[in-house]
Structures are given as C-alpha cells and as structure tokens.
Image 1 (cartoon, rainbow, N blue to C red):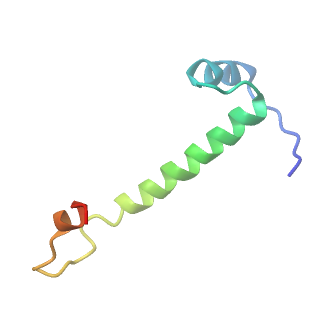
Image 2: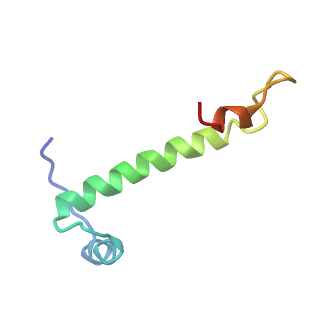
Length: 67
C-alpha cells in the first residue's frame, strides 16, 4: 500500500542507529511495524496471566522434551 506520511526526521535517524542491516526508510518502517505488532500480541498474552486454568496433572515441562 502506498502512503505518504510526515515522520519526525530525528526519530528516523535514531531508529537507523538502533537497526541492523536496515538501509532504507521502507525497510525501517516495515521492521518497526512488525515489531509493534509482535509486542502487542505478546502484551495481549500477558493479560491472560492468571485467567487460564490448567488440569492439575498438566505437565508443561514435558512438552519441552524432544521426541
């Protein structure tokens, strides 16, 4: 989707300083959007803490073992 927006130049420059292997503004913005979405999904999962009940015999550590 093609979009024109005005973005703070100083913020863009700072973001480039923290980014690895990102060379264009397009890449920078796409990376930032992906990280934003990922962080929001993680936040939503954290809100579920304490709201999910598991069976007493449920062993989450057994799922980590290789089969």
